[in-house]
Amino acid sequence: MTNIEYRRCIKLVVSLGFYAASESWRSMLRVFGRKPTAIVVAVHYHHVMAEDRQSFARQMDHLVRWTRPISTNLGEHLGAASHYTIVTADDGWKSFLDNAIPELARRGIPVTIFVISHRLGQSIDGISSDRIISEIELRNLANENVTIGSHSTTHSVMTLMPEPDAFLELMESRERLSSIIGSSVKIFCFPYDAFNLELAGLARKAGYDHVFTTMPSLVEPSDFTIGRVPVDPSDWRLEFHLKIIGAYRWTCGWTRLKRKLAGIIRGERRPSKHQIA
Image (cartoon, rainbow, N blue to C red; front, side, top):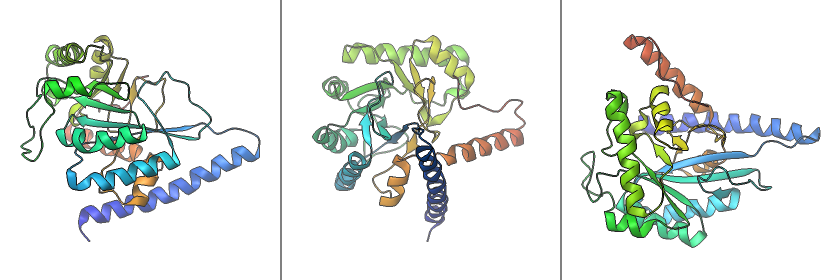
């Protein structure tokens, strides 16, 4: 067993225990006549290669069996279901367009794709097996089941930028994407999950309704910053199940603690925080 598989196993076991405790508490609420709050989880993908399409399709079958998929329009009314899932994808990879979008459309699952506005048709991060969708593909992609969000102009680490440059990333990406798809882009996702309170404030100033991160927390529609759980077609079935029903949200606290400790070690006066209400 590799180190990565070992860590996955540890997370899975802890998540099983967390899920058992969480469901026990929710059951107790029902016994005393109180309705538990609906659990809303946002997940995010990157690539879905041709060889992963069947695995992705099985995950989507599982998702609609156990949860109700909803869009990133967080103002919509939640129904009577107890678990909801928001499906998102980062970067705008061609493989996701070719292999994931048809499976999502077949099941009527809404999806949000966060696109890098000034890298259309290109590849990033030295990846040669895939590329970002082109401008024409992006224009043809936007429809009632596909929401387009911004993932910056250049996919840079925005916490390393001067504030004026970061604000330009937020504004220019939104303006170009809005121009291409013919409708306003209102949500943003930080590249590499590099964000802080100041950047979230700039995003609000730039006119975004919500910003999304990869911190694995539950979705609170009233929050400006929305956390997401990373998923992949290679996830084990139980692992994927626990992620979409909210059992991995404990890792958010663990991740924040690690970041805080790392900031203290680096001598930062104020470590980055996760949420801005």
